[in-house]
Length: 140
Image 1 (cartoon, rainbow, N blue to C red):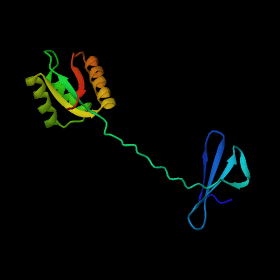
Image 2 (cartoon, rainbow, N blue to C red; image 1 turned 120 degrees about the vertical axis):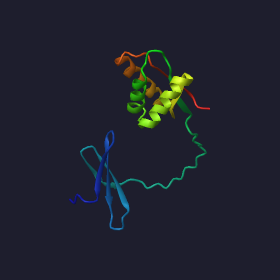
Image 3 (tube, rainbow, N blue to C red; image 1 turned 60 degrees about the vertical axis):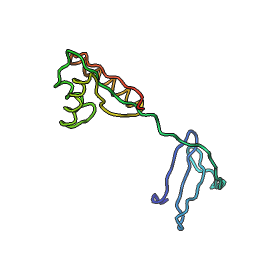
Image 4 (cartoon, rainbow, N blue to C red; image 1 turned 90 degrees about the horizontal axis):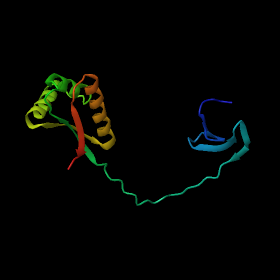
């Protein structure tokens, strides 16, 4: 039995055995869990499915850092570098926006990623005993 050109894929109770023929087509043979089923071929089906499903872009959310009187500017830069992967200049620009305007946009992400980033900021700030607040809002 050659090993080249044959693949076994295990599903719940069956193995599907795929073997490449000489003409590069694939022959499907259904096998039971621990052996082949008498060499019977699976029925070949050519089904085209038409679909009117339209996928929309997921809504995007802005992650914001809010200013407070206790969190140091260096810590805000550290958060922007470690969690949001910003470079030094961009981190300082966002930090100054937070300091001067009261809040600054750290990035725009999908909802799940924005939630994760906000939670990471909360954990890192708590570990370093800072009350830094991060929120997310839908991007208009």
